Image 1: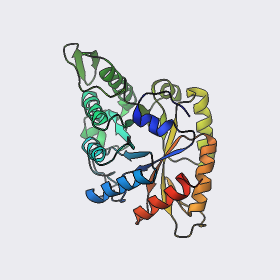
Image 2: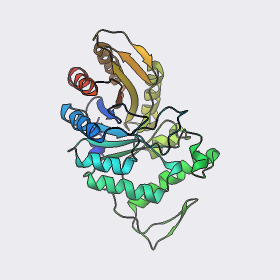
Image 3: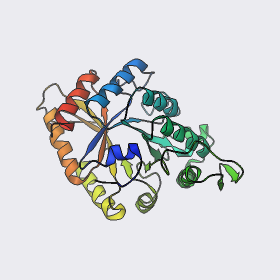
Image 4: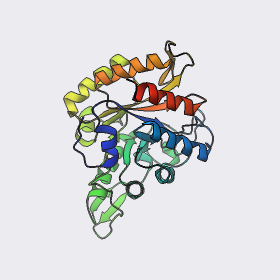
Length: 306
């Protein structure tokens, strides 16, 4: 699809005619402890070299063992800056920044900084949050997260798009005598609400630059994409899915949380079907211990082999 959107990262992900693929950090699978930085960067460069179009990082401010993981551990902004310095032109994405727990001025400045340092490669998935203990930790009313998400989402657009803005919210007030710099490389950084973000589908279609969702059963995903096209036209639809490649290429699928363990032949057919439904981008969370082999095999057989 052609987005017509003049932003390098967004176009890398969504201007292709068919389904594109990104890889999700941590590429080494270390999501409860600090991953090996040099290995993460090596695998990131490898993913770029074999044809992945995006590298995606999750925003997990605190580690809650009951939830099961701490994301990639590192904070999104310094981590993406570091990744940008070690890659060339692959898109960089967040999946997703929890707007309800972050001050919009900090988000606007940090994101625009990464966007500038990466030559316009940053795309922001944004979310309302889903880890209950984090709300009191940040003194945020969990029941207000839908309203807070909208307010901060709209604040980002204004902070990026206007010089010396006049803007007010529960987070604070700008009276036209202060500016937030740098500005992004384009008129805005693309924003993709994640999940429902406590919003209506119509609001997401009107305000978002696309929709980022979690893994869904195929029939449900097909219905979601069909409804999305009717509501949002050609704005892109993306999902995140966990992938563990079986040693045997013909192995039948076994369910994982938010994904599958299966042979590469099944995955090839699976992503062919998703492309047929109209999916624009898939963020692949590689679960294999031998991540380099899995990334290479996925690229050879699915990115280039379909």
